[in-house]
Amino acid sequence: MSNKPRLIGLDMDGTVLTDDKVLLPEVAAAIHGALAAGVETAFCTGRSLAEMRDILADFPDMRYLCLESGAFLYDAKEGRALRTESIDRKTRIALRDAAAGRDIMPQVFMNGECYMNAAQIPHCLHYQMEAYQSLYDRVATPVEDVLALAAGTAGSVEKINLFHTCPEDREKTAAMLQGQDLPAQFAYAEISSLETSPAGLTKARGLQGICGAMGITLQDAAMVGDADNDLAAMEAVGLPVAMGNGNERVKAAAKIIAPDNAHAGCAEAIRLILETWGISVK
Image (tube, rainbow, N blue to C red; front, side, top):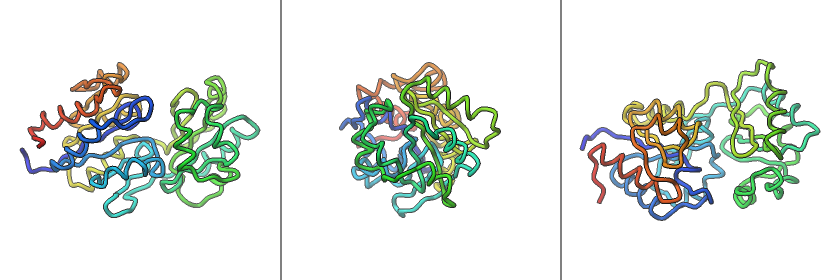
């Protein structure tokens, strides 16, 4: 085994977690095993730090986190952000105006925390986000008007999600934002969610930041994912791994394809990565 440190990036939803948002014991054990073997293993997810705290309580041995699709890098050992990237104010105002008077549930990530409108938090089902109801009940900070807060703050706003009642309404919002020459990027997620992030942001950029902190390159890293927002990171690292439930684009980019997330595929992915690197786990 080389003494050079290595990094495994793990997507959360659809990879570490089952579709029911459950962390299987076999997956947790595999992550702990990799960390014990001296391989930094980092969750690489679109979730905020607030949405990860429950899970992180089970991983005191994990140091680095690539959160909010790379906009928020966190050092859990030192309890501080390594880097944040913020959506510009022009885009935040455009999102506020696009949602005005419409049936949309916004979610805003600021400095790693999750903010939502107090009146809407209990109604995730209405916005096609029922699977996240219990999570948002626990971790979301309720405010009166979250988009007004985001538009007016001088602080960091790393990510804004607009949860719609149906995909057709999401299309209307996307059309409203097109042609405004906004310095941001937009992505479809879940059933009818529209995600907004700083321009050029990818999980690859986030993993690069962690590699920099570790003194390694992306060629010394692996990435396990299942969806399009994992592709940039998978294409950048030395060892890309796709979940069995991943889409065809993700599988085409992978050197290894593991079983699906319903059958602890992430645990097998970690085992195969360590085996490829010649690292044994006790």
